[in-house]
Image 1 (spheres, rainbow over the protein chains, first blue to last red):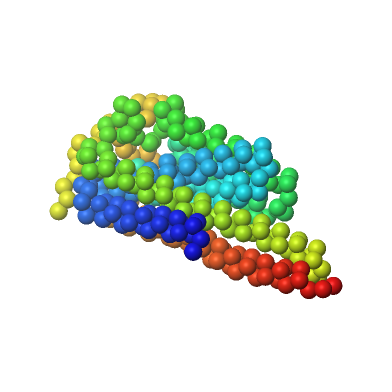
Image 2: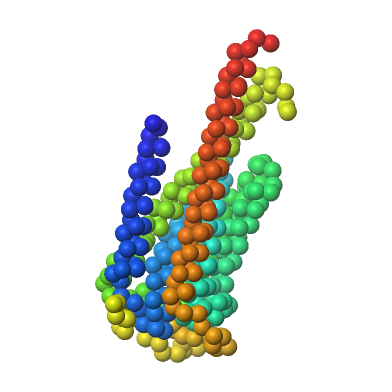
Length: 236
Length: 84
């Protein structure tokens, strides 16, 4: 058994246990929030909020760091990491948008509103979706890789804008956990949120790991094909 | 039976340009509401469908790529040992 496989399996088992514990806490032990927050629907929060900070933002940060590294070093591994992290940013962005809109319908009475935080978050998801599509439908050449890496860096610039837009421009998102906010009202809720952060961060790491491995295998396959052609295999 | 929390964020209307302290209905929003329970079920189903689909697609891709890479490696090794 390879060391990386062993580490992956251990991480997967830990993540599964934490998620099982989190779901038990959310559905059986946590009190319901007030009706204006959606009542029992407020329990969406324990997945919605961690999927933003420890899924979406973490993927973006990894993509940003790997893209910057790729632009300076040209490393194939960093390119695969940036590509894998961009895929994960889109997946967690999807979780964020879908869970957010369903909760918004209950709490705000509307599926979508052009609130500054929602708008900037949607824009960021679209930037990462553009990276994924660019890499999927263009040849995997050096210019395309550099352009995708530059987009990965550009997308990360939006993260502080999303984070502080609600403080700067207001909007519908309430101040609950930020400075001056009313808080969650129950220590068990805060605890569940912390566990949610850990669970989502681990899931994000697992996803990035797997996607990166897939892209590294693809690069390896391309190299082996080249090698085979140089050894005299026919191109068929 | 779980009791609803009353102490979390209050529901005052927001000041212009500032973030509200609590959850406020959006003006012009539909009065037709989906129930709390169905919101929760739909949201959790959607979250898990997205996460599980992503996991499944990724695992399938990794598995097939591993097989392809191993086969290709073997083929190259055989080719390099074959006299031309």
